[in-house]
Amino acid sequence: MNIQYLIDEFIENNKDEKKAEFDKGLITSKYPIKGIKTSLLENFAKKLAKNNINIKDIQLDCHEKIVIAGMVIGYEKYDNKDKIRDLEYLIPFIDNWGSCDMIVPRLKGLENEREFFEKLLTNNYPFAKRIGIVWLMKFCLKNDLRNVVNKLKIVYDSNYYVQMALSWCYAEAFLYDFDYMYNFITTLSQKFVIAKTLQKVCESLRVTKDQKIKIKNLRKANTI
Image 1 (cartoon, rainbow, N blue to C red):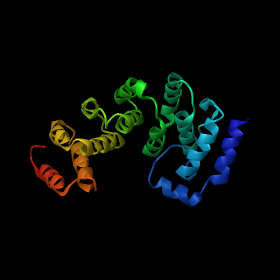
Image 2: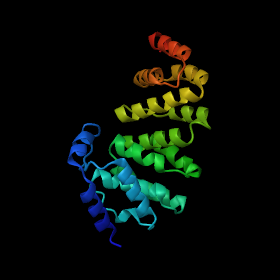
Image 3: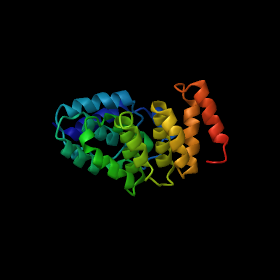
Image 4: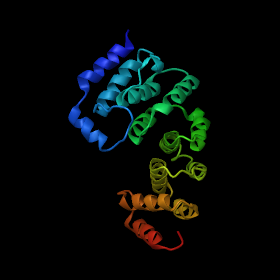
């Protein structure tokens, strides 16, 4: 099976110039963006994964191919250590929040590799940090909230997409343990992260009216 031919054929048959222009308004990448729907990428990646392909056989020359490679890592059934090896190979190609956030939710079953994702939090590459944050949020936050959010306190990065990932994770944490997070958020030093977290909590439909009043008062307080 010629993997590269199959992938190129898929890209050619499913690219959408109108959607590509829309996507370019949402994400910035050094790679060409072809405008292919996530559902199509997902279904195609599942088919590739059934054939136990090597992601290094994929020519990573456009945004969608990078996403496909990441999804294959998630869907293919093989040893977790090898999945981590492949993820390490792929991470330098991930250069926007969109590919990060499409790939990470598919990286299920790697809970025993949590140390790897925690190490990403101190990586110099911003999107490696974001992968670590989003993975911990998706797969560890609900059942280990306090350890996760305290681990995230070590993340200091001026990159917008890292700070927004932190805000996203902290806002999700409020939904699981409001009282703990209400006190925790005041211990952070990054004003932008605090502000965006509280904004996201206020906008959530899963927060009660009384809780929103507390958050709004906290936003006004000079103590943060």
